[in-house]
Image (cartoon, rainbow over all chains, first blue to last red; front, side, top):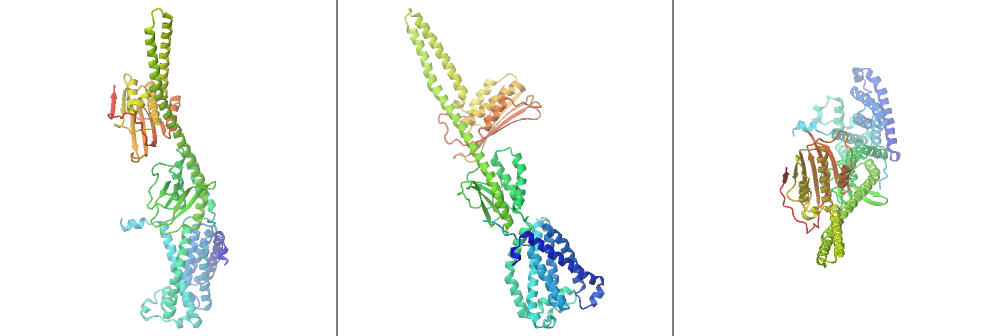
Amino acid sequence: MIVASLSRARALKAAAMISFILGVEAVFVTLPELVRGVNAVSIDGNVPPYFVMFAALLFGILRIVGSIGTWQGQRGGIILTVLANTLDMMAAAPGILVAPSLIWRMAALSGVLFSATVVVLCFRRNATAID
Amino acid sequence: MTVIDRVVRLDLHLILKSTLIGSLMVAYGFCVFVLVVALGVLPFGDPEALMVEPEWLTPAFGHFPLLDAVLFILFGPSAGVSLLGFIVVLITSPTVYRWLQGGIDELLDGADDEAQEHALNVMAQLTPHLDAMTAPYPAILPTIVATIAQSLKLPYVAIETPTALIPAATASATLAAPPSDFGGEGGLVVFGACPPGAAVARLPLHYRGNQIGALHVAARHGASLSATNLAVLHALARQVGIALYAAQLTDELQRARIRLVTAQEEERRRIRHDLHDGLGPMLASFAMQLEAARAKLPRNADASAASLAYLAEQMQAIIGDIRRLVYALRPPDLDEFGLLSALREYLRRTQSDGTLIDLVAPPTLPPLPAAVEVAVYRIVQEATNNALRHAHPGLIRVTLAIELHEPTTVPGHMRLSVAIDDDGRGLPEQPTNGIGMHSMRERAEELGGSWRIERIEPGGTRVMAHFAFEADANPDPGRESNPETTTDRRE
């Protein structure tokens, strides 16, 4: 597996990149919907509930901030990235079953899988030269 | 301890660790369950058509959409699908938990990509202590274990050596000491306490291919040493091995020096005995016989009488020289009366008008090595002479104290302290290090002891010397005991 051959430094950089992309994607996807307002989103049956998109926007911002620290190998950034992706995973998972359309279900599934990948990469350990 | 105290004193590290593990395990369990349900439902149609809300949960719905979704997912699928989901989560959770715990431990416990850089950082923290070290080199070992433990946030670090470099315990005792790498015969320098049941990693310390010690390390309770920490410790072990080798060399050198000085004093004592008890009496007898022979000469043998008289005078001079030589080798009072009586006799002879001399000492002293007796005697001699000559004190107090660290039924560790206090003019602003002070310092340090001089308040000077040594397993049977009083005042 690709992940198995990565050093910790590279794994953290990969996690930072993926988390950053997910965060930017979440901001760009949810912000236009949120701008429409709670009522408009509630009426529209083709988008997730307002609070779900708000949570996705919030976690997206946290992911962007955390990814900067993760790229530099800072412990605080790594912890923030892990927590943001974990919470987003929990918020996105129900969408796999109850999302209003197939596209949103696939988005939820990909969100869960990518978030899980980021968490795994953040906990990637070096292969050690221990006798 | 109240509940509030317990909460306030919670370790932030523990809170963060618990939060991370808790949230990750909940997320993992929920996501796996959702995926299993999705695999069991989605291929057969719309989930909202195939999953049924339980009637008993109806009152809970309609309050919060996310809660509705979660309850629907958890209780909506058929019993078989739900059961399968729970089983998958249960089976995989322990493995995931262990993996997460290891990853979180490494993340929170100072994991670095560069183990060597971390090891260098730890050594950099040790450098100021090494530079400032003035005590005997083996005393650096407690600093090393403390620095490693604090840098890597470990509860227990210890260095085991084949022989005890530092007498008595130098740090806190361990709750559970690990098995010894040297059959329990060596010494152990410890920092912290080994958590009960914790796994202890033992890293051998090598120098030039020989194992000279071992580094014992334990992780926090319920945790294991991270791979990065182990790598750092292996890198540190090489540096610690060098430091330990230097400490052992210094210790062996000091022991050899003590043996040398002790043997030297024992040899002087033997020579003094031989001269005083053997040659001296023989020469004295010879002189008396010469006198007797001269007295028996006829009255007309004046020349022979004069020669015999001259020989007798020369013999007396030789006897005087031998007596001075014997005294210079070792004060005779030490061998004949012991240290306490010898000091008392010396102070009595040294007594001057206007100065009170006070000797405070235990009633008896255990048998002391000859070298230590001479060193204490000479230091008291030099210090009192200096005080009388330069300080013009009203009072000079000589205090002897002895501490026993182990029972004296078997050879063990003893510590003798001597202090000479006076209330005279005190030390000058810039005291010169004269021959006398140099001699006192050398006498103490060549036996592994310490010596210092300092001002005392409100005025005066204190000279202190400390000696640590083994109890004399073979005391001199010819030495008299010393049933002394505690103090001896003379005016």
